[in-house]
Length: 362
Image (cartoon, rainbow, N blue to C red; front, side, top):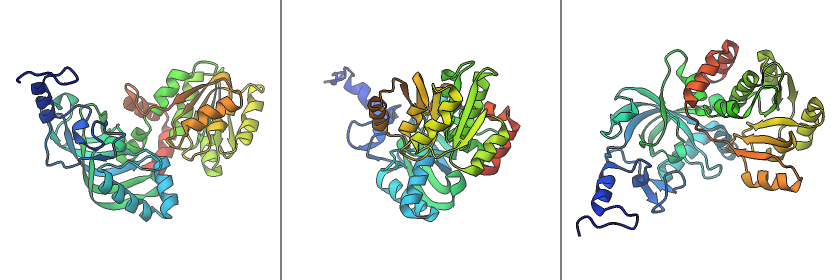
């Protein structure tokens, strides 16, 4: 019967129109299981020859694999070339780069090939160079080949095609910095804005993994937010990264400590805070097993924010309970309003930070 309503109160005619245009959330690309959203789905349809008006199609040049995922694949395969093999296998099997171990993906750099008529509001045109700000774990992707693997930046140069949904954030590539640097920054663009929301004047902020990519951005934002009356403590396992961190003068104190050792982290942070702990602790470490380290570094009724995709939130919640620690636990969100502009502006304001990150990732 024309106009009949489905179980969601939507007419069958409206449903057919939606299917033809494509669901802005991308559910029309889900192959398995039915009814799932793209991120938790097991398999996506990445066939770009099927056109939906809510989509953008992108010719992919670079995949920026998230740090926890790249490290896990490198450890599992034994080499960077092994990472390439695992990525090709995952994309072929799942229609997206969704690491089955870490559950995470990364993001990509590419050139817009097609803009659907219902995606024109995104403000990009055919030929624009863009970076996706949504995870590869929900982005339909097909790869023809991997051209190069760059372990230092966790990036893979590729030939492939991706499909972006109407709801997925993206950014035009800036023209005032190397693209590889911009891509690395945009991969962790959510970090600094979250610190800006949580840190205030006079606070003590501890950053675990402070010498890495997201850690450097968090330390820089924390320095800006706490002011002269506050304190920033950097915890970094790598002596070389710790030396870089000291040279930037973002932290009041830098300790060379393995963040997987909660007692060592506690003993490094508590003496600097009168035995109380930090008001805000940020976990930016790309390996598992640091949940309790972040919690024991935080004062009672303080805040602990986990950015890394290697975090076990079960371990964090039960660990805090087990040691009787009353702290607020935050799940890292890779998205915040204006996060791309915020992060790029932060790095532009710190020439030494920009130079260091360019030497590593650019």
